[in-house]
Image 1 (spheres, rainbow, N blue to C red):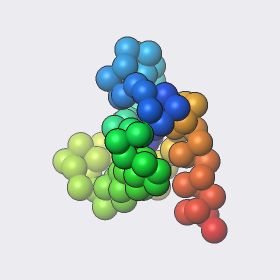
Image 2: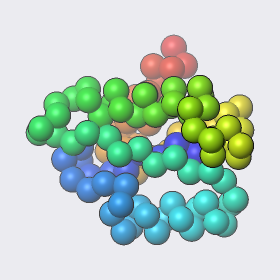
Image 3: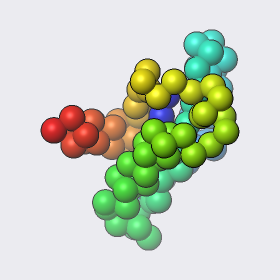
Image 4: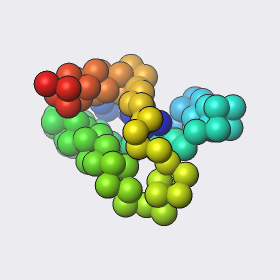
Length: 99
């Protein structure tokens, strides 16, 4: 599972307690590998920086550039999730990748 956090593109991170707790519980309960994307925030990094970061993370997973992904991940069953701004990133990237 690849996850993009919320925060209106300007706040929060993957370490924010609400996301950390949700993702830890999800990984444990569903026994899935979770990749949580720490995308660049505005206003220091204007859009499309956040989109670029999530897309790069998807390619990182697809190309199995990490030992954990290679050993425990099944990229054929990969899903993209997000909350708030992260859901916007996910929906837009889903549209782009499927077009």
